[in-house]
Image (cartoon, rainbow, N blue to C red):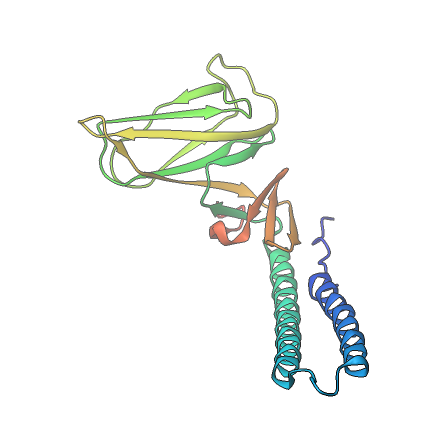
Length: 220
């Protein structure tokens, strides 16, 4: 059974900064004490300068404390997001991207031209950028779906792995038209790290923020 990856709760960045600040502060106090012991009674240290340095240390310490609290909040949010990601296991999710993993089952792809195009080409390329399949594409400004059976242009099944749908749309003046793309795939696992939470679709990690819909396999 696939589980959510563990989260780093050490708060290492703030801890390291605080340790460094404490070391510098101890050194500052040692130097300050030495100066006070050896200062010229007729020309004592500037109290304003000494106070200013102490205030600067206090401000840095407060900033580090705020960063520590923020790190703890981010860790908590990531933990909550990771826990909720488990509910996606076994579901079919639609996410905004053009890359997916082919694992022997047909792949569903969607594309939406921003406006009706004069020409639209739809190709499927492998990790080396080689085109393995060219499919027919619709030109109207609405969402269209394509199901790729995993075969190349010669009718041979492609190896399992990551593939990208490349859609190119142009108007009657050969000007490029923006095309939004989405993929539908089945979630096989979930993971999280310091950058966020991810759904695993085969070997592909999809940012959970890219998900636009979730369906039971039967409904799909």
